[in-house]
Amino acid sequence: MCVALLRALGSEEFKNSDKELSRCLLTSLHRYTLDGGLLHYSTDPEDAPRVVVPHDEDLKYRILYEVHDTPVGGHLGREKTYGSVSTMYWWTKLYKWVGTYVRTCETCQRTKFSPHAAAPLASLPVSTGCWQSISMDFVLGLLKDKVGNTGIVVFVDRLNKMDHLAVVPDAIDGECTALLFLDRVFRQHGLPEAIASD
Image (cartoon, rainbow, N blue to C red):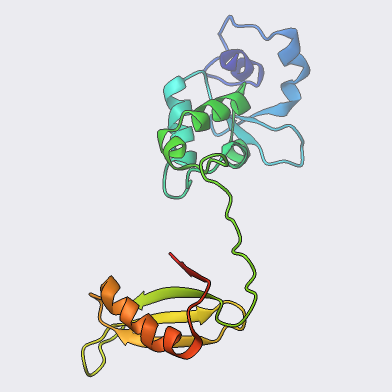
């Protein structure tokens, strides 16, 4: 196909070729141009011409690799990869090539989001009163204070968002956390119905 097109477009290199254009290609000859030894294809005169890629699988895979797998490509999905490739290049069944390439990309298969992999997040029940339901979390890796503590434990009432904070070392254990809970929360507000923590 490419040789016949190049001959029809007046390429000196292929003027003696015996390849003939099919009737289908003759009707779409106006979409092809020869510029600097490269065959270009354009669906609309307003669109920028795209380089026609010959029937060379290695070249097609190299183009898809550059557009999809490199850090600039970022392993985008089929539609965005097709959009990037089709602005610069054209070959027959390009959309199918891109779909197959993206679908068989090992990195994409390992890291793509699967809507069936995880259960949906469940919301916590609404608290019935202050300090009946609390959240607890740690903030670690802060600058050392005078005593050497580098973290904070946070107890938050889920209804009114009031909190109690306590400085802690990075190596805090469950027993120390329980003692802080008794001192900061239980002593002042009583035992909550629920404690949420990750």
